[in-house]
Amino acid sequence: GQQLNQSPQSMFIQEGEDVSMNCTSSSIFNTWLWYKQDPGEGPVLLIALYKAGELTSNGRLTAQFGITRKDSFLNISASIPSDVGIYFCAGRAGSYQLTFGKGTKLSVIP
Amino acid sequence: DAGVIQSPRHEVTEMGQEVTLRCKPISGHNSLFWYRQTMMRGLELLIYFNNNVPIDDSGMPEDRFSAKMPNASFSTLKIQPSEPRDSAVYFCASSFGQGGTGELFFGEGSRLTVL
Image (tube, rainbow over all chains, first blue to last red):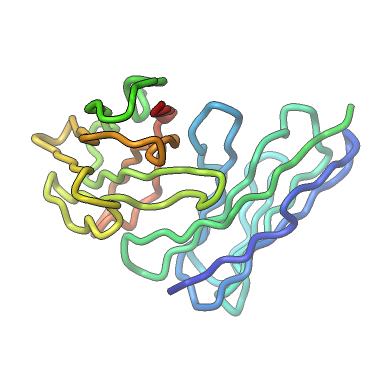
């Protein structure tokens, strides 16, 4: 089956720093979704990507759909304490099936 | 607009008891998904409904698990009898689009603890 490797697993950064995380797949996807999950809450959709090479921003967040269609990255600029949480990537190959990464746990040190 | 609504948010029960989790998808969405989240396995798809019809239930762990969607605005996930290994957070999610390919929106989850 499809596998998604999300890295890093966790990261500690200083407030104000930029953050970068990525996901790589063993197979081609035609959709990438990035989610953030706060403790005790459900995943919240941050950015959706539909085309290879697509670069999309949502405030301080920027995500790109890799041109090989096997990877995607998410950048957060000028991190703030409320950015703390677990970030998940999810890829879709064409059907309803979404494959989720294991998540990147982000901690922001004030 | 209301998002996906799940109840209960927390459920603590004893092994052997029946558990029923409920979900109201976003109005107008035609696909509904039930996921289970654990530390070990992450997010796992249990079952997918499209236009109220179960399309893929291959992720349902055992016959103890069943799900229904009697109409476009309501779904249930039932576990009977429950076991301690069923302890997890269960998420309902919905989307709009052909064949369940739209953007997926999650509810806040139902945290189940089976003692």
